[in-house]
Image 1 (tube, rainbow, N blue to C red):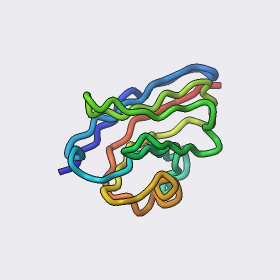
Image 2 (image 1 turned 60 degrees about the horizontal axis):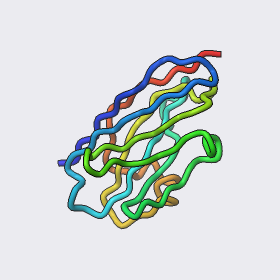
Image 3 (image 1 turned 135 degrees about the vertical axis):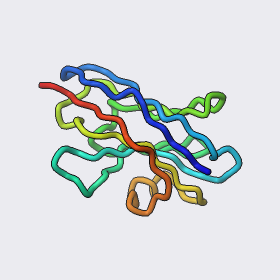
Image 4 (image 1 turned 180 degrees about the vertical axis):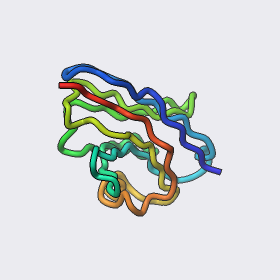
Length: 129
């Protein structure tokens, strides 16, 4: 069974940095893509894509975070990370780790968040102005 557990969310000032972690289990023998998504305040029903990573190390980022966020994985620890630098108030939201166990690519992950099968419970990031 796939399990995703996020951590690392916190409150920071504009310009600050955070690193989110997603501990994964149940993904070791499957073809999958994994990514980070966020739910912005007041947008209860939408989770927007932030970044995605495939098993070959290819990455893709939303335009709003390019150059500021980095997605990477520690295979030995079965952990996915999102390093977030130069945070802005509009980055405030609940950040989710999600995985799709199928032969999909990072472009698909960013374009189809509503079709992704496995989600964590989220971690809150608040950026104060």
